[in-house]
Structure formats: structure tokens, C-alpha cells
Length: 389
Image (tube, rainbow, N blue to C red; front, side):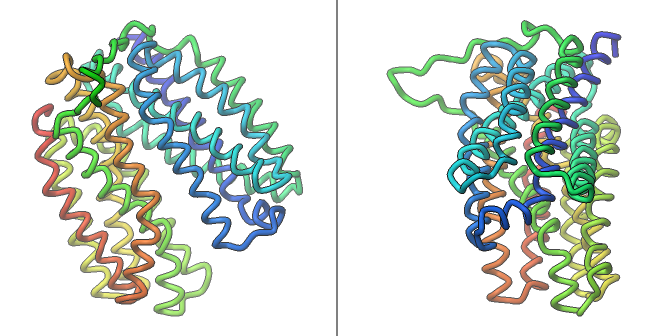
């Protein structure tokens, strides 16, 4: 990898880190936001759905902007604009300001996410090697650091608004320092194909299959993150500390898997790695649930973490590579990542209610077998990445 590409990798890693830190620092203070707004848990959950809609609304225009203007300028602008909404998100004078601020912040954050993934595709293509897994590993670490950061502000008794202003200044300062590191805009500019006779542009089936594989991974991530503690506490009466262990095991396995995925996919190919990871998810979780208890749940959650950790970065990488190598006259890499992201983001909307419904019908222990089925889906859909291995 040349010096220019190493600098671009560093800049992109910084953007992944900042993207995760900003929102994670707010998430850990949601109880205070809930109390300030005076809303119930259910209503807070509905308000937070706005974040999903904000992200969805950004995907199509973000793909077009990245294609026309290059991913680097869009990344920087989205980071700067998004940081300006951080103080508004933490101001919380009333429900409507909070909803509008969250929508605008997540629109900018999703645009930044799209652009940084598109830039990673450009670096991969120029370098001839895979880097997406490590970048998503950096994102995972950013989420952990963001959680500690928000918790630190809370422990010091600093107001939410103070946190929002400080974090906004931090993001603005760091992204401006990182700005010269990115590749020139021209490296991935690509005029989107015009619509014919007013019809919507149709993407090849391969991109939708990649999206569904990513959806399986994202649903697995969400289920493991949301339900591990509840399962141990309600089913086996675990203490609060013990109930937290599945989440810790899951996140540790996620970071390990993501930092290992680039080397594994270089050696064995994306399709083989995804097949193995799908099998690890399905078999490991099923065995863990059958064993039950703390040991069984920890085994299951480690299996989910290792299994799904590679899925989203690999499908984004494969989408960009597929656009460059097979469909360069049809779709830009940024637009390919956008359509895959649109399917993947659906997981954040359908996942929690789906698992909750199954838990009410079959108990949470057996409802989690849904993730085993998703692992089989990853295994079956992995073949589409063979085209770019």
C-alpha cells in the first residue's frame, strides 16, 4: 500500500471512529433524555425510530452525492453538518425539537457512513487489498469509547448540552485535521446513470441479495445486543453483573472478528469466510441455547459475535467491488453501497418487535433460534460474493 493510500486509510479510520463515538455518547444518556422529556419507555422507543427514518432518508441522495462529487468531500461535509446538530440533540427542550434534531443528525450521520464506506471501497480498489473489516472494527471500538465518554460526562455531573457542545467541537476539529488525508474526489466520481422515460433505476439482483445477507447479519447483531441480559436475568435468574456478560462476550467477539476478517477474506475469499461464519452462528447459538444457563448463553453469544462480525463490512466491500468490476456502466460504487445499506438498515426497524413477538409466542430462549436461522441465511447467500473474490 502506497503512502497516499495509508494516509487515506488513516483518515477513513478516523471518520469511522468519530461516526460511532458521537451517537454512542448520546445513547448511554438516554435515561436522562427520557426523564427530561417526561415520556414512557414505549414512547421513547417510538421517538428513537426517527433515527432509523433519518438514516433511510439519507441513503439514496447520499449515494448520488458521493457518485457525482466524490466520497471524500461528502464525508467531510456530512461530518461537519452532523456535528452542528449534536448540541440540538442534547438540548432537549421538548419532544418536537428532540425529534427534528435526531432526524437531522441521523440524516447527516448516515450520509457520513455511506461516504466513508464508499471511500473505503475506493481505497480497496486502488490498493488491491481488503480493509473494510478493520475499519468496521475501528467503528466498534468507537462505540465502546463513546459509551465511556458519555458515561464520564454523566459521572462528572455535566449537563447533556455541555456534552453535546464539547463533542461537536471535537468532531469538527478532528475531521478538519483529517481532511487532507483522504484521496482526491476524482478517484470515485461517477456520473449516475440517467433514468429512462422517468422510470426508476433498477439495480442488478446481486445487490439485493447482498443486502439480504447484510440484513441477516444486522438482525443477529441487534438481537444479541438487545436480549442477552434479559434472557439470563428472566430465564435463569442471573445477577445484574452476570446478566451483562453475554453483551461483553458478544462485543469482544465482534471486535476480534472484524479485525481478523480482512486477512481471512484475502486468504480464503469472502464467500468461504461468510459460509463458515454463517455456520458458526447457526451451530454455536443452537448448541448454546440447548445447553442453557450462563455457560450456554455465553457460548451462544460468542458464536453470534464471531459469526456476524464480518457480515456487514464484507457485503459493503463486495457491493463496491461488484459495481467496479461487473456493473461499472450501470451503477457507481457509492450507489451500490447505498442500496445494500437500505436493506441492512431495515434490521433496526423490524428486529426488536420481531424478536419480542417470537418471545411472547415461544419464550425468549427459543425465540433466539431466529438468529440461528439468520446464520443459515448468511451461509446460503454467501455465494453471491464469489463473483468478486
